Length: 486
Image (tube, rainbow, N blue to C red; front, top):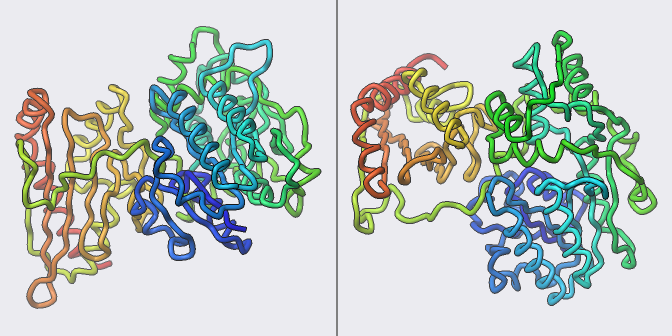
């Protein structure tokens, strides 16, 4: 079949696309910017078209001749995510109906209990499901609670809370029952929905074989990871707001994403039925148990084989113009800090160091300054430094790197990062590798800042005195590391 995948730059979509291709389907991916999918391993096997679900006039080409359309986008992290997702679902449904699409598949969250006040996150997920089910196109809504897999936001919350806190005071919701499901089983059900009979137009609960409290999940994670049993004391005083700040402080997941996830855990999330198995068989060997799902996820993290991460997805990208390479800056002020060094190493050795920056390798200068900047960013609701990187050695356009986003990469030559920390302006960090005489290389480093109003100018002036230490030390130490034996 011809499948359309929206959200292919995200956690689930980025894993579903190669699975559909392996099953023999033709896959078309819709992205706001095609360059975001340029470097993924399956890019040459899929058709990538540009379009925006908030702009219905851009969708006709994407939906043309499509049999099955997957709705896998989510604006979690935006303050207006309910309105944004409502618009996206409405436009998606209209485009699918107009193009004669035979099937819509949507991955949502558990239905809110009838006697409970739903969280905004679950309320939005349910609303999107209703819009798609009412589209006039046969729709399958898969409802999953917590997804366990390397790189998922839920798994990273669980992982970091358990690993970093041998003893913790927790909110009462850690006693609520949850039915987690392994990401491999979610993908198996999503891919299997291509074969659903035409008359199927309904929602399905999907969950793994274990029903656990979040407290039990932390204890079992600790056991699988080889950690001591955790001391967990639930208390009444931790509200969802305080809980999200607590999660944001300990884990890489920022407050703006942690809060809706935490609010969704306040009510129990246990599957009421398993009707999906009547149409899509359970995976060979049965559904993956919680302990096995954790072990598989940890093995992927350990072996640096995490295909996608929650941080890969982002909201609407910042405007692409002007770029640091533009000869003309479209007017206004542009502050720059430029460093250049000759490196007594071949370009390939220097490039290995450049492409390995961030994450566990750090930023090669004044670690305390980078840490403080990351903490300050977290305090004002930013992403901070904890997002790390998906792979310790290789980067792709569009993926997160600490509090940067990879905007451009030319292997062996150029790495350009766009800042995603909270700033009164827009910023880039650009690193270039150039060949030099006698087998040596040249390293060029440029930081660019476009201030926004008086606060932007004041910000640059206040941090400029530290640039000699931070950026100067960075250039010097990158060159020094490249000169060391591999």
